[in-house]
Length: 561
Image (cartoon, rainbow, N blue to C red):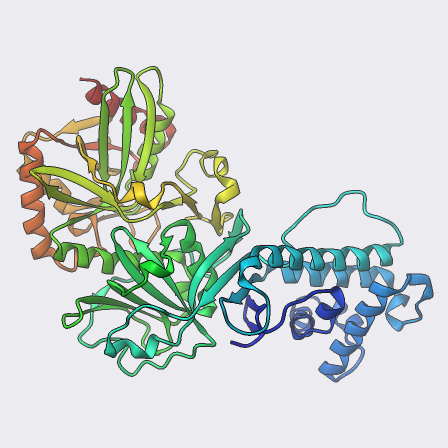
């Protein structure tokens, strides 16, 4: 892989090919040249006056070369020792220095080290190396700026001046079936370091379309350039998914570190699932294929600006996961689970089911806020997707994700910020703003959790509190209808229905899923598990904290009985 990959707002710096030991190496490097060149192009469109000040030649290369020379002498010499045309207008010079620094920091920047390859940096020190690189960029900026200002700054802010993340990659050591050998040369991510809180601004902030089955394997005829593709080996619940992604979606992929545990080398013997994300097939599709010969589900998402929204990657991974789990007689749940411990020592496992925006996460949040003398402890097990199975005559739930990908709009205003130091925010200033927060360890996530309450999150009816169904058949009718009032997380508007409130597997295999539903619901009733619905009001006129509190209070009254 080349020393620098730069496209649109993505910058990937390969430390194995070129590691910067000094500011002088940065100023002479290809990356600095490219950033100045890109910034001049940006100024030409957005600040022509400053562009005319900076671009003193008609030749673009000459302009960039002059500005690099200026940066070098400003870093080395005192301003009073320099004779340069740019110094005639120090106000514009300061504006240019600030501008190029801010332009650079708005890019999504990642450094990379190859494990055991090349003569560059030893991968054991990738965090220290990235930290040193950040400090070099910051020192360079401060020294040049203070030289032009002819004074020291009074306030210093230790920002992530160099990168937002760093990764170690390695060659694939596991097994791929013959049909998938086209993927064998794609580097596999071995370690990830995120500089959180991380703010990302994808061009799209909602998901459109549905996931459909295709007749041919998307790897047929696939030709991946190892210089433009990476693999994130994810532990999705009890399965391993090799997620191959185009580097243009690098930070969507790295955000998975807050959602799916990164599988280590010994766990990557062979994949249960494969996802091709950013396939340059020109088909504009989100599809999956079941490879019966190798028992692998393969997801495919075509390259396009819309798929920069994190939901496309997350939900494709969960779709192929859920389809595979149904083959193992697990019932996939589009839901959340919390374990609460009452003051008398009793523990209750509560599962909430509902489509996007129904209020699963919000009800858990309200229940945690309600933690009074009756609830002495609470633990979120999973936040968006899980599965039920029967083992030794008992119903158990397990999860798929170690984190939560939740809407900022409907959560308590302080919720995301309590975990801000570990959070990744997506378009926090817009509607349907999202945050990814790590919640639970993978070991705990896949541990069998007893279920005591199985509740449908009803966001469209104006009842309050909680309702218990008289029979599992009555409950099934509500759960299967999957009704909700859409809140703008997808292209849907108003009241909609989705089979079992889960368009990520159960909807695609409804007949098989209904067989599992009958088995699970009958067993839940037999075992005394409460089947009910909770009214969240998120699609009603009076949506808000108070209505969610009433819902949580209704649940609390029931679990105390």
